[in-house]
Image 1 (tube, rainbow, N blue to C red):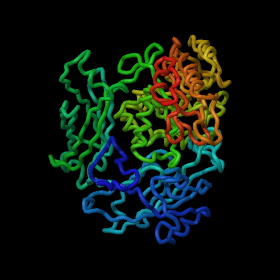
Image 2: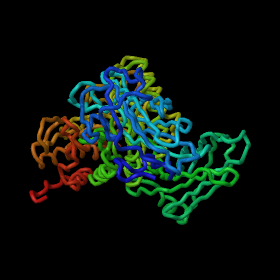
Image 3: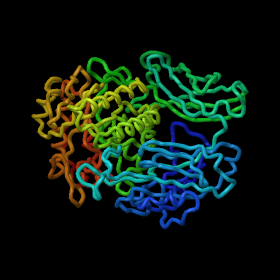
Image 4: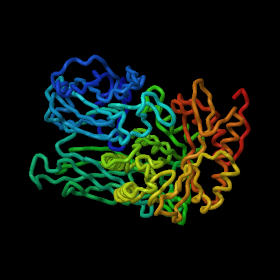
Length: 604
């Protein structure tokens, strides 16, 4: 249940969907708290009326919030009232926040129900015991730390005005707020791991309050699982839950038979993003008490002899760098349609993937990548300097991101660190090297199915991929540089070693994971890029000059072009900030396929 008149009204958690939910986006009361007096004055209980209103889930710095104030206000408060709908009566009520930047405290009817730290990851609270029959009040205090360079922030700038590679800050609620009704015992999560070699799906179930309304053994809990493909049931299973966690592997029957042309016809790829639907029903003594819908893709990412493989076949990754910013809403996509457009535009240009840069993206983006077929590199929003407090914050939030996004078939690589952000002295500081290694090994311990890049761009510690950032624009230099693995790894495009001292290249697949950055201005205003084009013909030639040496290299296994769109003062996008193409998508597609197309005619 949800109102289509609300902003961002689509279901916010598409891989774990229930029927009974309410979207709380829309108008909230709002107040700045620059003197940090709200808690002392009990704004969460009986405080004064707030003087502003805001449209959630857009941050106050954005135009779509209705405020559009980009000055620093590190502490902000939100408030709204709501009534418990009849469908929620007698059930537990869970309050969900998609993301609040950076630290949040939440009260319901004056009772604190949640505290969370981390600006990009979700959290929830069981608010059942705090509720009344009607006119319930939710209050949120969000605190940002604009000047703290050790805060995992991504591209959010700490100065008053954005400049260079840094953009306008996001403070407070910036993803959907919603309510969900569940039974006393319910499914908390299900982890889905595909195995294409055995044509099976491994499922790990986690229950919330499995012994509610009775002691251990009071009633038999079971999970009924139905897997279907294009409306055809391919597997059905029922098994008992004897604890909070149980695992099950289910073989998927295939009407096409096995082998070439059989089960492989149902594998997920960007070219054929086939998905299985799955329904989970939790039963107590045969009676349904919870029902969840989900989906998964059968796909495998592997590395062998210096090559990347998708579903056991060599696969060249053609990625675009995507900052995930929008002119009227900043980090929050303005609509679900806007998310879909970015995915479709990326594919139309001939890219098969995106590297989401310095941002843990909205789950709806990953959903559309799953549905439409686009590889994603999942990257953490980094800090800028190193402290022990940063290391704690960074690790906690990164683990939450892995847990949230593990099931998405589109997500194929994890990138906890980028360009030594947060670890600026990694070349000679053993503590910072240990931090990078700890993130690598912790990520691998939680997800053994995906490659992990320890420090994208340069100064790698232990890493599954050798990724290089190279904004060289001259074709002959790139051709020579990537003629062999030795010349590629010994290069220092940014005057940084590719591997940090004490680490070395060990045959990992080589990818140029940032390059290009050609500025081609199609709008007014000042801006910059790593190199520049004077007109469309020059832009086409410059694109070909940086893309084709990598396509023709005998050792490069993929690339990531900078970037999808202009962002604020950065003019190096393939589209403008408001998503107007600078060239016809087909021309960019031809370049990505190794051709040098003719410039478009004026009529185009």
